[in-house]
Amino acid sequence: MPIGLMDIKGQIADVQDEVEAAVLAVLRGGQFILGPNVKALEAELAAYLGTVGAVGVANGTDGLTIALRAAGVGEGDEVITTPFTFYATAEAIVQAGARPVFVDIDPETLNIDPAAIPGAVTAMTKAIVPVDLFGLPADADAVSAVASEHGLTVVEDACQAFGARYKGRPAGALGDLGVFSFFPTKNLGGYGDGGLVTGRIAEAVEMARMLRFHGSRDKVDFDYVGYNSRLDEIQAAVLRVGLTRVDGWNAHRAQVAAWYDELLPAAVRRPAVPDGSTHVYHLYVARLAERDTAAKALKEAGVACAAYYTTPLHLQPALSFLGHRQGDFPATEEAARTNLALPMHPHLSQEQAAEVAGALAGVLA
Picture (cartoon, rainbow, N blue to C red):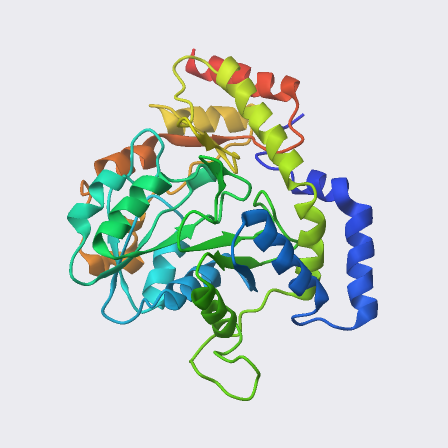
């Protein structure tokens, strides 16, 4: 049987009865915008994360833009981030009116290299956006140390890392503001788009709450030019059910990763997990020198796989105005050439993990 990269249908089956009851209750209640499920989910997520508040938004990209604006980022500012991430990270910076400034990644963790950040700081730098890539938190203490030294705000892009922890602290609560995506494939995913802004500064969280609703508190007075970016009530109901299961799902992902770590051929470079960090494996991303050849053979063998960010952000056409060239960020470009995500989801069995490892061993042989 083919082995899929993800298994959304399997996760839906886990909670189908509860979700159907929750959605039916919303439909019968007739309150679809900023209703009781959104309010309850925001409270539950703030408690889970230990933050002063949480604001449901329409999607993770809007969440990043809103968080940046809530942090005071605007026209003429610069925001430092990584070029090895999904396009939305940089897109949100531009949408907020600022200029993305890239620094290279740590070649082991694939997250932003904190040692490279100070050299990119200028008088126009306003914020840093570390990304918790593939489910592994960035080095939050090192990033925060740079931010504190230069008076910068940290907006944590935790869109791929719900449930991960760094030195005992939850991803999404490691910066001044944090952002999650609830896209269906995420560890905590909805049945459509959705996102969250959270933070430890009450004024910034309240600003995000206003910005998601046209810059208003009351639909009468509009203090800012904001967005129509509200988490849907039905999605909130679905996510409340998923929140009760996500830690278990993440634990199984970690078990699958442990099987891979044990079974994969020695030539395959495993994901690095620094001491003190908990990886939730939104994706299990290995690295191989002959990635494209291996990927083709795995797919022919019925094993799904995918390469991510093969054109890094600094080489994307839409960001050509930044003036970057091939070779500007060597660690990023090497990761783009060699990364390969293997099947990863909460229903993958040990036998399937062994089958994936065996198929890859056959390819490499």
